[in-house]
Amino acid sequence: MSMAVTALGCGGSASDGGSGSGASDSGDEGEGASSGGTFGGQGGSLDIGGGPGSSGTSSGAPAGGGEACATQTAEASLLPVYLAFAFDVSGSMGKGDKDWHDKALKWDPVVAATKQFFADPGSEGLTASLTFFPADDDKCEVESYAAPDVPLTPLPSGTFAEAIDAIEPVSSDDWRGGTPTSWVMQGTSAFIGAQRQQLPGKYAVVLVTDGYPQGCDDASDSVDAVVADVQAALADDILTYVIGVGNPPLPGAPNTVSGLHAIAAAGGTESAVLIDTGDPSQTTAAFKAAVERIRSASVSCTMAIPIAPDGSSFDKERVRVLYTSGASATTELAYDQRCATEHAWRYDEPASPTQIVLCDSSCAAIQADVAATLSVDFTCERVIEVPL
Image 1 (cartoon, helix red, strand yellow):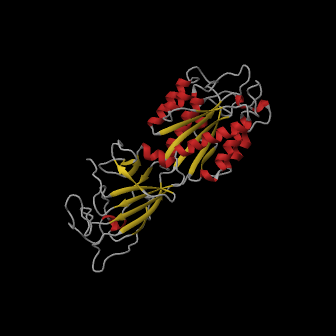
Image 2: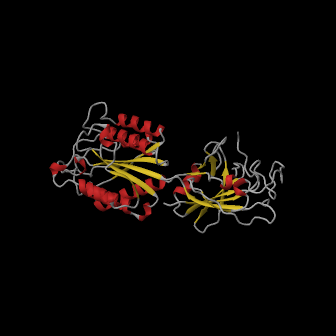
Image 3: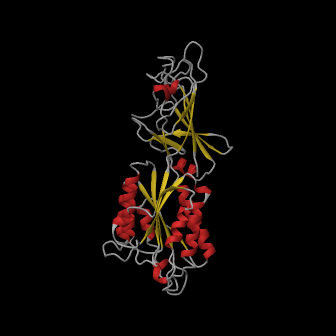
C-alpha cells in the first residue's frame, strides 16, 4: 500500500503564527504580520520528507509586501515500514519422516504464497528482510540470526524467491533440525535495533513457523521463552506478527500451533493467524490472505511534520488533517491528544511536536483503504487547542 500525503499551509508571522488576513480565535488578528511568516506566508511547494534539500517556492504574494495569507503545498509518504521475516525451514515443514510432515501439503503451498507476496506489485512501499531458521550451523546462537539471509530489500523483488529456491532441500537428508524460535527472535530484534539507527521507520517481525520451540535447551525450548523475547521487542517498539502452519488433518498429527497465540499477543498483534493444511490450493490462499492482513495492518499511521521553508516557524495550533478515499468526499479528522474521539489524530509530543499520529480508529480506516490519501492544512487561523 502506498500512502500519499499532501500538506497545505497558510503563512503568518514567525513570531506569533498570525497573518494579515487570518483572525485567530484568541483575538490577535493582524498582530505581528510580516513578509514570510508561518510556512513562508507566500505560498509554494515543499518536500515534507524532512530531509535536506527541501525547498519552498512562492506564489500569490501581494504587491508591496507579503502580508496576505497564502498556501504552501507539499507531498510525502507516511513513515516507511520494514518487515523482518523469520521463516521456519525445519524438517517438520516437509521432510516426510511422518505422514503430516508432507512437503506437498506444507512447504510447497506456503512457499508459493510467500514468493507471491514478495513479488506482488501490491507490496510496493514496504521493505522486507528474510531470515531462515534453524541456521545450518550454530542454530542455538543469537549471532547466527543477526544478519538476515536476504537483507532489507524494497518490495516487490524476486530476490526472496531466489533465496528460498537456494535453500529448498533436495532430499530428506537436507532438511534442517530443530526450531530455535527464541534465538531467531533475539537475533532478528538485534538486527532491527542496528538498522533503525540508520533507517528510521516502523519495524515488525513476521514469524512463520509450524511448531513449538525445540532442539536447543530446556530454558529456550518453550513458548514462555519466546513470549519474553517478543515482549522485550515490543518494549523497543517492534511488533511481532505470527503465522502458524498447522499439520494436515491426518490420524496422529499433533496440534503444534495453538500456543502461538500467546506469542502474537505478547508481540502486540492480538493473535496468531493459523493456516490449515491438507489442501494445497486452500493453504496457499489462506497463507496469502494472512500476509495480506499483515501488510495492511503494518501500514504506518505516523507522518513527520514538514520542515517550514524560508526559516519560518511552525504553529501547532493552525493545523487540520483531512482524509480522502479515492474520489469520495474529504473528511476532516478531529484533533484529540487523548484519542478519546472517533476518527481523530494527535501529536507525538504536544509540547514540541515532530510527528502527526493517527488514533486507532483513523489508523484502522487508513490501513484498510488502499485508495486513502491524507492532507494536512496549515491554516491562517488557530483551529485547534493543544494542551500544554
